[in-house]
Image (cartoon, rainbow, N blue to C red):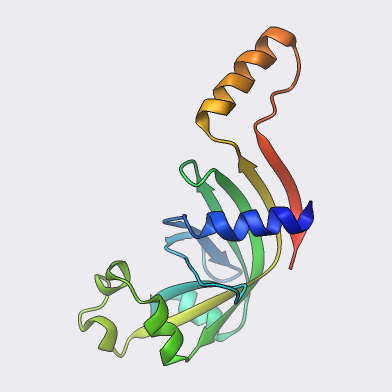
Length: 156
């Protein structure tokens, strides 16, 4: 199940618009993640001088919390941050959402590419609202616990 749940996590993270990223020196803040095929990393774009950029420069441990009903995903992901200097990777993940934060767009000197490498995650992958409502109704009538999806812990 762990490999299946890990695969589900990666697929559903790709549908996530934002989550809460924190580190030991940076309190939680909303950040838009980008997932790319097969590199097993979560990418963020931030600016020089932010506490997330500073935490990544120090390779701090971090936590990313995902709570997204539309992606049917809830996850608590622990990992480590780093600053990446790959222009090709930045080009790959650059988006209009990132561009609005930088006066000079993609050419802005303040851009910092941050990589989160997950180490472990607690994952709740739900089956969606319709099935969840059915399961809650069934459970209330039968006294059973509702089956609303899969939960487990994965290691990377």
